[in-house]
Length: 57
Image (cartoon, rainbow, N blue to C red; front, side, top):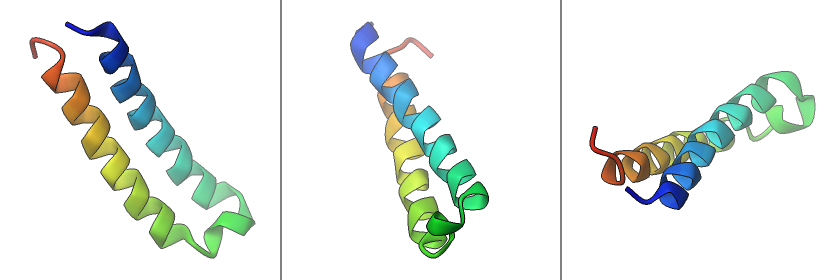
């Protein structure tokens, strides 16, 4: 198990959650909310794949 890649994957997932929360709480991000949320979906997919590939789950 590569702990660095697991940490990067977890950071991507947490970052995506932060992006979604930001689109709801900061009006400046609301203008591009859909684009930010689509980015968050891809970040979650990439991060979770990275975590699963580097763990024995």
